[in-house]
Image (cartoon, rainbow, N blue to C red; front, side, top):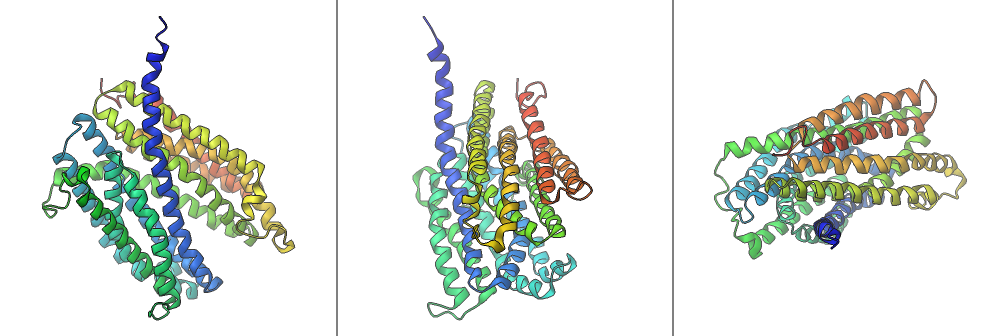
Length: 460
């Protein structure tokens, strides 16, 4: 009798589990992007100077926020692994959640001290003094959002690691209209509030972050599946061993994400040296690419949980299935998004500017060229995002951090600068450099996953 159906059953089961976890996480990532986009859309009604100042402030804040996101990501593989060891574990999962919140809170104080001087930092980086002052007006209210947002992230990772991510999605999607309403009221002076401009935009984000934290606190307190963990009870008790474990796993993730974000910030600076048209085209193309990236990012987050769960059970076959299916799913999406970028670039660019306006012809031409490179970008960016996710499921974060440092900064910026300036390829050269850097990181991460047993990353 042919036993192929029996052999394929575990793959089908894993595929269903991976998809059911990935889809809500992808939607949640898109919701998070929508919240950020709402802030800039509202500022756009104040004029171009407000947008420029707001972008400076948001970019500075986001650089620190990304570090916190990386650190709190440690909760996912740690919780998933513990569930794999003991499906109904309560105490160890509670310890991880609490100490990850402690770790997220610990970074807030130094970050707040730095962001309070955001005007001086931006001027030191060569930014316009007037725009820097406006950015500081936003950041001095926005910076306090970091603490509640860290708490929200940890609780969202907790429910996702328990494979109940829909609650994080619901809270995130509910925040989109809430953030729009509060921003509209505070920025422009409605509903009895005085017009606060940039300061109001930051304050709206703070209120929205508190809204998200309260939403997740209600979820984990009222839902019977989460209530039994008593996450908020005796929260003040220190657990230094688990605190160190969170930093051991999370710090390399935080640095890796920081390296990726800063390399794209450097690309913006290099585009500015080439010209305004290149800078504008880059801003459009990178927004489109970033939107596409939300999907493999969600797949990678789901893979961390599924691989971590199998890793905790010491089930090498299940971990392998979860990892390879995630890489395959990410690649399939990347092929589709690459085809869209190649087949309809002007349609996508038209969402940002009027592509038929003669004044926008140069920006449109450059953006089309950048999206051509972005099609290649999709394949390698998806592979590195999912590759990092599957390795995080094994709690393997330090070596991928080194891969990121070499790939992004040595190869990516190095090749991009060489192609853009000495070889005179301009902005296309920078994009080719970024694609090369991401490609190297992707290859190294997939290689490390392929050799995980020989490298001793999984138990024997």
